[in-house]
Length: 326
Image (cartoon, rainbow, N blue to C red):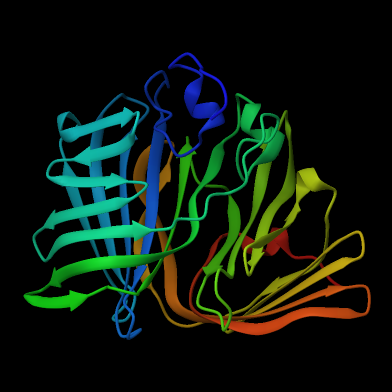
């Protein structure tokens, strides 16, 4: 970062950092690390975080989703076991450690250390420090979103239920959320298992409360061989179609001459805890074995067409309010 900031303001310009030091309850914050081994036989989502209910009661947690067997575990820790630092960024929950470059896990059925090699950050600008653009500076949002890494490779190994799994050459992705509650409705998706290197898709469409009214906001980033194409409410992009049913999700977006079409095949998933006014009492079903076909055009020119594997996919809340007919 090109300039120094007071500690209280630093997380605004570096969304990966912990935002809860000066927050009031209710509040939650959680980081999401996706891990897929090089054989693509194993896929995990690891979600460390902290939750403060309206009464101030708090606890830390590490959630684990086994994406191949659709099983999840919620490991609860006392709030005193939650520690963070900014320089360098690090989150510790008991013996579990999370940073931009490394994850160390010491959970009942999952142990080991992985390195996050060559992480790709969301481009940083002073007026747009993260994936939310200028919305990053709005102080009353219900939920904020950030990217840890759009794409990286993995090194190391984990022991899962007594079996050692090698992750050298595997692929990973990282993001985070913080605020009071998840939205009333959302569609979220992510995959970085494409046929081209440094290619990754992240999708977030949600119902946003805004000064007494609600609107459908969206942030979509498609990293194509290292070049990021952004389609978001704040970029002037437009939603042309949104639809979801039990088997598929379709999203079509335009920005100027660019047109991005996403067609997902939904697979079964496992259930994760989600925040409701800082209390982890919500439930959301997340698949880690869906597929998303991506088509990107500029005018009549086809820039890319391909399918991402091992896609994370959620359709949460009253998703019908997000639908847009073509």
